[in-house]
Each structure stands twice: as C-alpha cells, then as structure tokens.
Length: 288
Image (tube, rainbow, N blue to C red; front, side, top):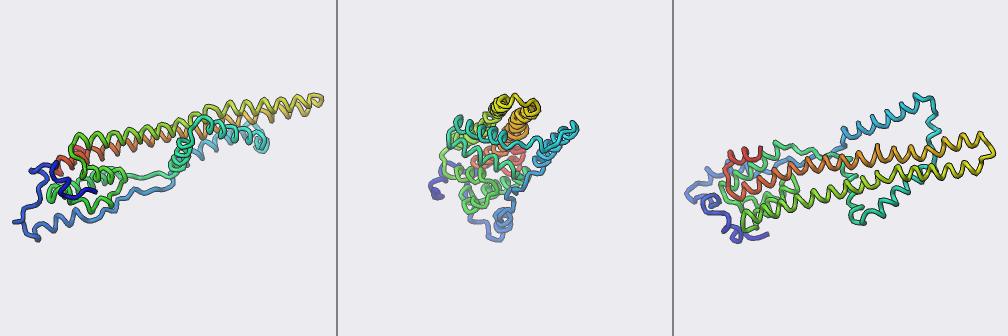
C-alpha cells in the first residue's frame, strides 16, 4: 500500500484537499464518525432455495411421468448403465478440459448451490459513505476502512483508487479485471456444456453395450425383451444427466455472471467517482 504522500498528488487540489485546520474537532467528529463506522453489509451466503425448488420440481415431474406409465421405478436402477454414463462423461470432461479450468468449474458449481445475497441499495449507500469521507478528509482517509468493505471487488477498487496515477489507468485496470472474471465464468459454463453435450452420446454407448449383451442371449426370447428395455435405460441416464443437471447448471452460471457483472460495473463507477471527488448527491445519481 502506497503512503498518503505518494497518492495525494494525482487526486486534485480542489476535491481532495485535507480539511481546513480552522474547523474544530467538535464540528468534524459527528460527520466523520457517522461515515467511519464499520458497515455490517457483508453479503450473506445461504442455500439457494429457488434453485433447490427447480431441482425438486424437475425430479418430481420426471418420476411422476414414469409412474403414470405404470412402470416400476426399480426398473430404472441399472448400476451398469449408471456407471457407463457417469464415469464416461467424467472422463470425456477431463479429456476436453485443462486441469485448472476443470478444477475451477467444479468450484463454481459448488458455489452456485449457495446464493450470495447482495443488497444493491445498501452497496450504493456504502459507496456514498466513502464519498462523503473522501470529500471531507481526502482519498487517503478511507485507508483504514478498506478491509471492512462488504464486497471483495469493492475492496480491490478502493485499494487501486489510492495507488494509481490517473483516472484512465484506474478505469482500464478495473475494466480488464471485470472482463477476465467474466471470461473465467464463461469458461466454467462451457465445461458443463461440453459434458452435457457428450452425456447423451455416452448413454447411447451404454445402450449399444446392453444390446450386445442382449444378443448374446438371443435364444431366450423373454431375456431378449427384458434386455432391450434394460439397454435403453443408459440412454435415459445420459439424457437426464445432460438436460436436468449439466446444461441447466451451465445456464445458471451464465445468469450469475450477468448479475455479478452489473454489480461490479456499479462498483467501478463508484471507484471512478471517488477518484474524481464527486459530491455524494451526484455520486448517488451516478450509481442508480
């Protein structure tokens, strides 16, 4: 972290000057104290009830459809078919995806199971509180509050605002950071799409293996009839894995990326306004 003297020069005299010594502590302290208090606005992570409801509805609809045909659900539990589809799809994903990208995609999938509730209005109020403090005491006055910022990207933005030499440099760094995060999220979604594209094909492979096994017992017609039905369960596994798990998860990642992108754009605008020393009223209108 650069010192106050190292970052004070590019901030401008009119908007970032230190408060005049003629102001008494009794006048300064109420306003400064109100903006310097830590904000309890850390985004909460909890199980995503909306997503869980979707999973339950999809599974329940599938099971109800099977039951309506009069088939016994036990008929669809075929360990050999499940092994072929799950392990085969996993292997194809490993082949098609670099190790780092695959690991990051798995972490992303685990992350979407727990939603992060970010209050946009509370975030705007937090940025405006920083703007008020900057107007009164200068940009370096928020140094002690950076670690208590409610969002990781906001912390990075505030740190960069204190060390860069120009507004253009700050904007370029932050926009590049956003693009890289967006690209990483798109890569994570593509990993799931690749796996979802191959899962039905792996299921067909399991079906072919089942048919081959069935043909080896062709002398017994009753065994042939049962074998045909069993063989096609692998195709059902592949279609289910692709269309109820992998592809929806990929679309969910993209939706999460879009939501995060909007918040980060707002934080970039807030960081630029802080650097420019915009008044808090103007700051609020810029962010909304």
